[in-house]
Length: 102
Ligand code: SF4
Ligand code: SF4
Image 1 (cartoon, rainbow, N blue to C red):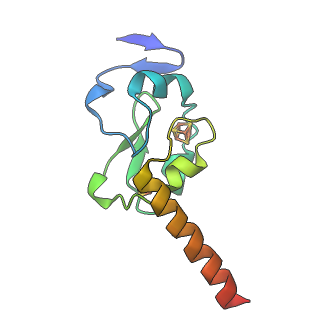
Image 2: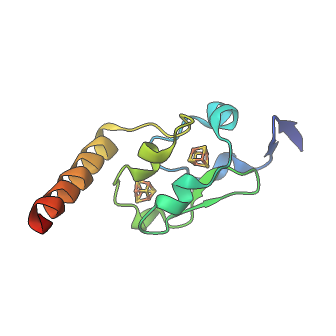
């Protein structure tokens, strides 16, 4: 096993990452293992692996909502076309709710 920064660099190449996650070599540089992406995922599709990087525990559950990319202030997960659409839909729904409650 070799190390890179604070991350163990193990057999994680095979793990599937959230949509828009940077390629592993760059994700390792950017990710601080804060866990915000794991916490925000509404369908509990993510966990941090042994190296502290997010990976899918339930890829089939992912709705491409874009919340994990939106919350990652470290640039480890970027919006894709699909997750940007998902995030826009989330924000529309949230503002519709505000109108309904107003
Ligand atoms: S939110 Fe970003 S920095 Fe935090 S664990 Fe997820 S990918 Fe890493
Ligand atoms: S896009 Fe949404 S559902 Fe998919 S992993 Fe990220 S937060 Fe979870």
